[in-house]
Image (tube, rainbow, N blue to C red; front, side, top):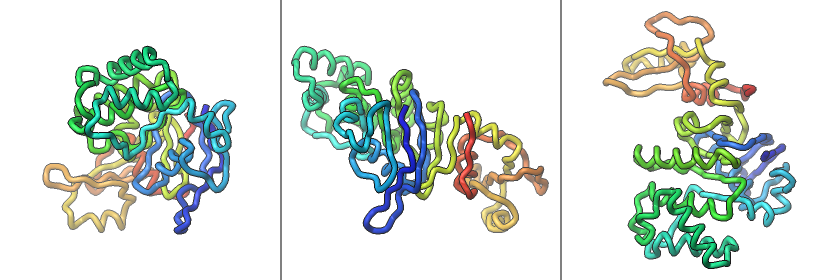
Length: 295
């Protein structure tokens, strides 16, 4: 269990990246949702011992994460949002080098581990290709391979599917799902579908504050019967925003489809729709103060 208590961080430029964040993350896939600039990466970097917090505590089992950084790093796998690779080195050689840095010094054992991880991430057939020839999805899978070195108990992946095509995204999410059965995996993202498909627990963060926690099914159930949709012309959007709580809008078939949050039935052409996690996400960001849903 990863426990975060009253964590706060303000940068020298005055930006309050985290504001009294408290959260418990059990074994399994945990989704951290939020818009760009919400504080997700700051929280992930703090848990990963890459930056200090101003206030609060983080513990993982018996490890005080903020004070025992080296102990946490021994059992941590981390795939940052920006994961660079050496373009002219093969995947096999690079992973072997990372394994050596991780402390796996016995050459035969290291070779076996590298071979196993390349097979797990479906990169074994291209193991001798230079990393510079890899697609975005292949580089992300290589990133997961290096994060799995040393059999980590805590794995953090920050915006892992941004920029991937649908096929690579599905392959990557399937890989994460398999990994997350026996360890704590934190998936930090702004892509709602990633969390809906993978995670048994989730949280939404915005402006450095925790806005909602729970499991996806429970938080979706909390909005059933409260989401209404309607197709409108673009020029009608401001009027509907004035009269209703419009939580999202998107183009479909040349018209603008709006979703509205309302506890009571709506007329004027609205139709009820089943709430999904995207509705929960936008409704949470729209509303203040923070909401919470028990699992």
